[in-house]
Image 1: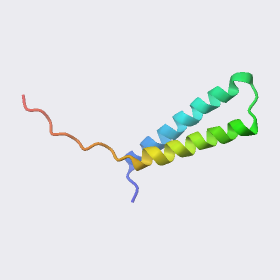
Image 2: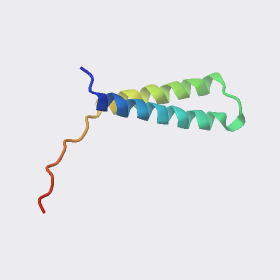
Image 3: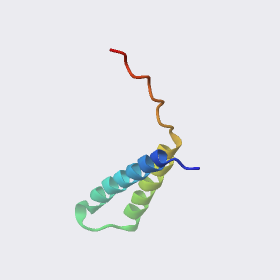
Image 4: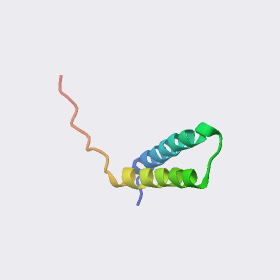
Length: 64
């Protein structure tokens, strides 16, 4: 079962990576095939890598 936290952080990372690659590709106002491939690889790479890394365990709250 997919936990919402893992999926959410992967989707946000993929959107961020895709947006960064898209902004870079739009520098000359034209996106060629190679740039689409770069955008797709950035999105897929972020999805896979971020999903594979587990969330950190919660630490115990500090006592005052």
